[in-house]
Length: 398
Image 1 (tube, rainbow, N blue to C red):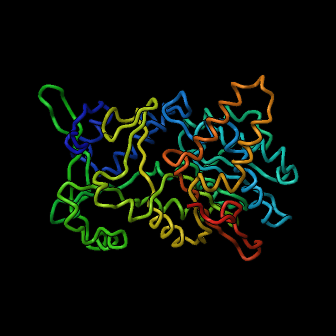
Image 2 (cartoon, rainbow, N blue to C red; image 1 turned 135 degrees about the vertical axis):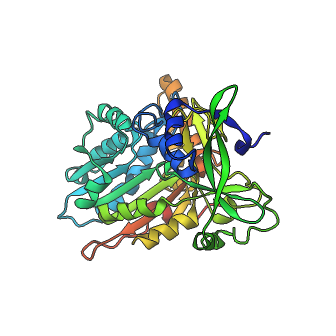
Image 3 (cartoon, helix red, strand yellow; image 1 turned 90 degrees about the vertical axis):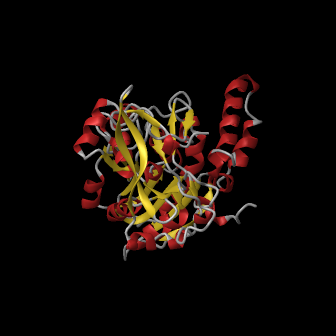
C-alpha cells in the first residue's frame, strides 16, 4: 500500500494560489484548517458536508432520537445541580445538522419542564453554511435558541452544560514525522507536475524546537525508540488548550462533556500506529489520504486522553472521569430500552428493527461504542458541588 506521504493530488486553484502566496508550503495544521473551515472552500465552512446515514458520515444522534433520550437524564442531573435561582444554558459547540440539539431540547421539555422553563439552547457554530442548516432544523425547538460565537459566550458566561460531540476531533492537528535523527513538522507543499499541473504533497518540514520536543516525553515519543523507523508520523493537538481556555471562559459553573474518539497515549502513539489516526471521510467512505479534493472531505484525528486532560486542568477544568460510549449508555439504560422494544406493537416491526439496529450500533465496540465520554466540571464559589455523573456511577465493564 502506498503511504499517504508519497501520494500527490491536483491542487485546486484556490489552494494553489494560497500556497504560492505562503511561499510554496504550509504546516499541515494550516492546511487542515483551510480544508475544513475556509468560509468559501472548506468542507464545513461552505456547508458542503452532510451529516447522517445518507450523508458523508453518520453520528450517534443522526441514527435516531434514542441517543438523546439516553443522554438527557445525565444532562438534566448536571443542570439540577446548578443554583435554583439562576437561568440555565445547554450549550452545544459545533452542532452539526442540529439533530442532537433539537432532540435534547425535546427531551428536556417533556421530562424536566421545570428545567426547560429556565434553560436556553445556545449554539456555537463558526461555519455559516452549517449554521444556516441548523436554523432551519431548530425552527420548532421547544427551548429558546440563540447562535453566538465563543467570544460572545466568554463575554457573558453562563451556568449549565457545555456539550462537545464530535467537535474536538475536527480541530486542526500538528503532524510530526521522525526522520531517523529528528522530529520534524509535516508540511503540505505545492509541486509543479509537468503533466497534471500544480499538485499537493506531504513532506517533512522544519525540526521541532527543543522545548516542543520535551513535550513528547510524557507521550512516549522522546526518545522515539528503535521501533519507529524514518517516516513514522503521528499527530499532536495544539488547539486543545485554546479551545478549552475559551470554553472555560464561557461556562462560569457546570459541566463540559466531550464525546469523541480518543485513545490513551500508549495506544495512540504505539509504534505500530505508524501513520497516526488522521482519516478523511466522504459519502460514507473512509480514506487515510488527507490531500484528495481539499474542501470536499471531512478530516478528523482522534484525541489523546492524556493530552486532553492535561490541557483541561491547565485551564481550570476539574476531571470527573471518562467512559467508553458503550459503557456510558448501558449505565444510562440502553439495555432496558432494548428490552422495551419487545413489548411494542408488532405492526411497527420495521421501525422497531431500525431502532434496535441503531441502539446496537451505539454500543458496538468496533464502531460508535468505542467513543469516549469525558466529563469536566467548572464551578465558581457559589455553585453547588458537582456529584458523580450517572454514567460514572456503575463500575467499568470488562
